[in-house]
Image (cartoon, rainbow, N blue to C red):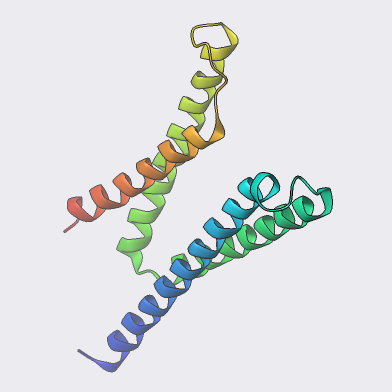
Length: 137
């Protein structure tokens, strides 16, 4: 393996590790913002606002880390990522809209939850990435 390829591979590993850390931190701040008010600080407004601001800050940091990782991809990796992202966006919009309409017209008796849409989009993105790697192997 030449020196340039070795450096590129190390950079990808570093970016992936950074992405994993930021994703974990975002999940922790999400859990704190969601469950902290009820279980940790009895709905104290100041602490709740601080937790939400921390979650938003880490979330925006995570976005920048994803962009940085995307810039480090080669053309094939970038294409697979963008195709999976486009599929996820499309499915998220179409299914999210239909999900809300079902509740509006009374075909489902419960209120749609954003967590259901996030799970669908996460699974769609993972499936798109896996399919892309399988397709272009």
